[in-house]
Structures are given as structure tokens and as C-alpha cells.
Image (tube, rainbow, N blue to C red):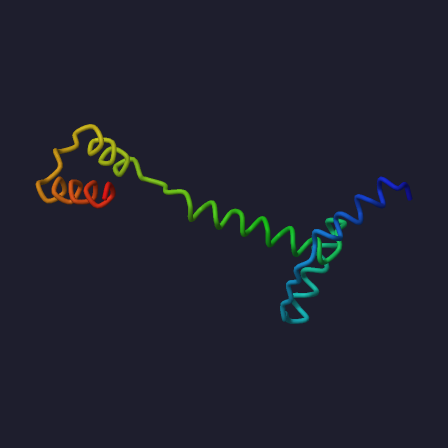
Length: 102
């Protein structure tokens, strides 16, 4: 093995310091092992890749707000035709500015 490949392998191994363990049924392990085999991956690589893909999708879905066509129209109308701030809001803004400058 070349020294470049050895260094890359060492760096990869160094970055993987956290462990994740899970108790699963024999049926689940069999299914995961079969799927990993079909993709030509180790069981660990398969499980980690699938977990990361699902985690990324879940985070993206929760961070993205999707509006219906009706909701979009209402939202845009509210932005375009915003009413003047109410007196209580103006008073709160003045108080905030005073506290901030003190």
C-alpha cells in the first residue's frame, strides 16, 4: 500500500471516534445484512449511510416551511399590505431602544 493511501486510511480512521450501538432483532439484522450485501457494502457502512440519508432528509423537512397556494397568497398580501405598527408595539420598540442604549 502506498504511503498516500496509508495516510488517507489513517486520517479516515482518526475521524471516526464515536460509536453507535443498537439492539435489533435477528430478522432486522438479516434484512440489513442482505441489503448491504446487495449494494456491495459492509453492514456498518450500509447502516450509517442509510441513517445519515434519513437524518438529513428529516432535518431538511423540519427546517423547510412549505405553504399551500392559498397560504402563499395570504402571506404575500400581508407583506405587501402591512398595517402600521400599533401604539403598544411602538412603545415597546422605544423602550427596547432606550434599554439597549443605556
